[in-house]
Amino acid sequence: MIGEFNSSDLITMGKAIGAGLAMIGVIGPGIGIGIVVGGAVQAMGRNPDAAQLIQTNMILGVAFAEAVAIYALVVALIIIFVIS
Image (cartoon, rainbow, N blue to C red):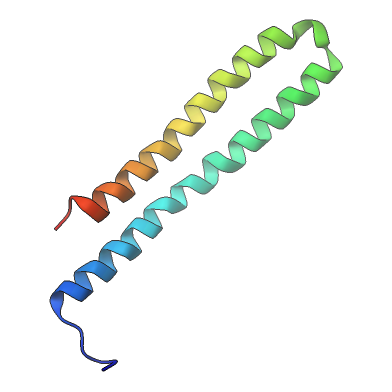
């Protein structure tokens, strides 16, 4: 029946909703990485002599932005598998 839930079902639904909300934290880094890489490609196109330095800084910036997305993933996994 539609109106009948036990506490286990509600906990499972709450975990799924919480993990989904935690993954909203991936949107910002995804957009940021796209902007950073796009800017780096444009800069390398304008100044090919500085491509090595630009690429190094771009990879460093992408790594820092990706760390935020990994933290969001870890929080979502903790919500699903650790919290009881």
